[in-house]
Image 1 (cartoon, rainbow, N blue to C red):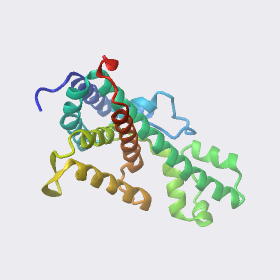
Image 2: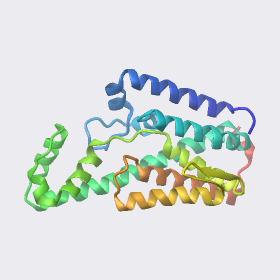
Image 3: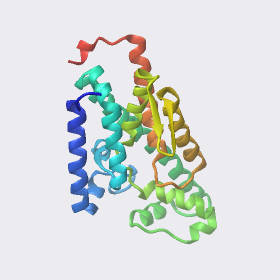
Image 4: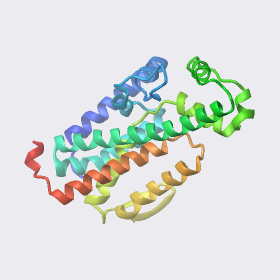
Length: 244
């Protein structure tokens, strides 16, 4: 693999520094830099980028930074810094877009269900903007739908995972025969099978609504963005000098 490349090193350093700052000033950092639902009062436009540098815990950042180093280094060596950074942030934005889009669907579905039960829309928005909700809503539309509705509005997204999934897809394209291992399945698996297996897990958990505390659709969004870019670049055979 060779030495750690410059962009990977700088991304890793920034992520670690922001993680330390988050431990020191957790409430402020999470409020300002996590990705909130657009109608939440905490939402700011810069969060579509800053959430990529936020992490929810030690294992979260360790996993993401290890993957950034292990899979990002050979890609930057192959592409160069500028193309790698373009790919990384584009995958992260793709993750934010799909995650927000799914949250929008979930939120609007719950909101419309309450409106159909005769609850005033403005009253609902005022209540949830104040960090509260009515227990009567559970009887109206069901606890599961209320929980999903409130989670979409109140739970911010953090982490580089969406960008990392784009990196994983690119690695599977570029080094399809490389053998990798899962912690819970300690046998070598070729990258062209390993990465789709991870994505399949996110699809299953995402569509079944299993509560894992992980933004599965952000992972899928990053993977889709990574796939589109790799397919386009392969088809058009971009000149490396274009990224210098």
